[in-house]
Structures are given as C-alpha cells and as structure tokens.
Image (cartoon, rainbow, N blue to C red; front, side, top):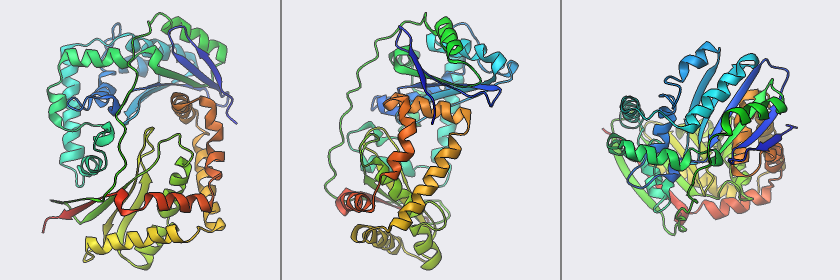
Length: 412
C-alpha cells in the first residue's frame, strides 16, 4: 500500500508525496496536463518540442543540466498524446536544487531565439531518424490517420509533419507555453527520502509565487463510431512485409479498460501468449507479432502488428489473426489462463512500484487523471476482469467495421 500525502498550493499546483527512507535519494516528477491532443491541426509537435525546450534555459537559470550534474542528480522527460512528464532524481541533501530548477522553468522559459533554433533542429532530426529514415517509422502516422478522423489522436506525439516545427514562430511557442505550463495545470509528485512537511515547505518556498494561468478548458472533438473497415497498402524499403490492425477501444477511465489491457496481455505478453504460441511457434506464420493498447486517456486503440515469415502473404497473415480473434470471441478464456495473465500483471506492477522514481511518475499520472490514491486500486481493478467480460469486450471490438488495416509491403 502506497501512503499518499497531498497538498495544494493557492496557485493550484497539486502536490502528492510518499516518503521512502530506504533510499538516500529523492525524486521530483512534474506532470503537465498537456500533450499532442492539445495541439492545433496545423501546428502539431509543440508538446514534444517543449519536452526539449524546457531544458534550454529558464528565466533565471541559463542552463538546466549543469546545476543537476553539480548536485549529483539525473533528469529526463517524455511526452505522449495526453501529458508531458519531467523528472529529476537527487541525493536527499541536494533536493532543494530540484525545487529551484523546476519552479524557475514553470515560471517562464528564457525563450531565446538560439535555444528555439537549437531545439527545433534537434526535433527535426529526431523526426527524420525515427519516422522517415527508420524502417516502419511512418506506420504510426499512417495507422493513426486511418483510425481517427476528427480527434487529435490522429497524429503521433512527434507531430504530423516536419514543417509544423520548422515554421513555428517564437510567438506561437510562447503562446503554447503560457496556455498550458501553469501551476494549476500540473502535478508535482515527490517521493523518496524526504518528509511531507519538508516537501510542502520547499514547494511553498519555490512555487507559491508563480501565478495561476488561464488554462483553456479542454473541449476536444469526439471521434464518431467507425462503421466500416478501412484499408491502406503502402510500399517501402523495409526488410519484410508487416501488417497493422487497429481497433477502437474505450477511454482510460472506462470500466472496460482493464479488460482490454488483459486481452492484449493474453494475446501477446510472453512466449506462452496465444499469438506467440499459435502463430509463431505452432503455425510458423509470423516471425514476430505483438498486441498492445495505446493506454490513452481518451478513447484509444487496440493494435495488433506483426511481420510474417518470408513467403507468407499478408492476406494469409491477416486471416490467421482474425482466426485467433474469433476464438476469443466464441469461447470463454479459461480461469487458469486468465489467472496466469493476472499474476504476471501483478508481479510487474509490484516490481515497478518498488522504485521511488517509478512511484513518483505513477502517482503524478493517477493524480492527473483522477486521484493519486487510485494507484493502490490498479492491481485490484485488473484482477476484477472475468472471462465473460473479456468475451463481451472482444465481441464489441474485434469486428471488421471497427478495424483499420495497414499492409506495409517491402519493395521487391
């Protein structure tokens, strides 16, 4: 059981805390409630750009990394469609350095033309390496654009195209920052060897002077129900053919979310999973195959992707996947098979939450989508899934009219 302490500053910054005296370290994790879903259709990639800009100098601190290194700390960040997450770990005696650094860049970035240009080029180069020059790198762009027609999940976190970042102006960047990177749009999670009283005291000292901002109320277009199968075929210079199948699923806080998660684990988590056993080992149709959920806050996707064995047509590979899905739809999963999946999930979660940094990240996430204490219900919610629920969810989701299929062919 993770003991959650909480406090909210007058400016709206939510603080969640868990003390762990077994380590001499402290983790500060700040989750901003902004991701690529908050971008304009013609100005994408901004949340990811800020993942980099936040390290390029703030109002009073020209360089973020040097003070971190001097304090024997480590830092990093990541962005997804729903949120932007920053973390720093420090020895307990140097923890105030983290509060100082994080508060200053929440107050304001330096917004120097040089920093913008440097980080712009970094992001552009990352786009080229990950999406243009890497085999199958554009698959996410293609499958998202097929599955989503109105919701901003239709582009990946890195953005729709390079030009959106290449043409971003300083005014646009400033506008995006002051709309979203605000104390009343963030969660500060602090874990490790630090008391709750000290956490609140340092948070008040360094964050309380930052004024709350006028954060826009999120009003995103809801994706209409897909009513017919969507297909696309592309040819690329890749080692082998691949197939991607995307099914619409529920949002993160829907009661069926854990059933979808369990279905993805049952299909492809581990060597004994169904797709691995049946389609790789037994029938030798695929060299590799995976099933996963996008784990997004709004209605997400259940994705199956795989690379068939040489000589197997994509049509044959697709038929084999549908056969496995029909099996789940027509026959109840045995209690033993489901229990095995649940045990694996539980062990992974327990192991994950043994690390003070992981706890900080997870507490911030659960607070952002609901309340931090829900972290203690995560395993129980997964364990509540039943064979009947899995069968119902499979019958609702795994139908042709709810599927977008991408044939990714290797050039001959």
